[in-house]
Image (cartoon, rainbow, N blue to C red; front, side, top):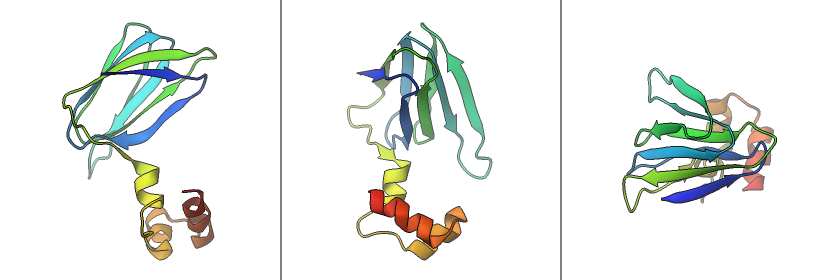
Length: 123
């Protein structure tokens, strides 16, 4: 279990846990949460949660949280494994060592190679 404190408009970036389902309970504030199903549908399931609401993120699916309030928010997260693992999407894709080829990322995200290089530079 973990306590998560969110600044106003703060986020938990898109990530996934390869070995655990996550359950999130809002203690204070309002959160926008969601997860995306796997290929080929890639369907987004999202919801606005208020104090006392609970949401489940299935194992292995990309998910996120965002405080949509002007005040701090607090949630408690429980994971179904002592070793859930975590992969933050941006870090994995743009921060790999060695780097994934700029050509591959530019084509995959349909963006200019210079933009890929600028993003990789930040990691």
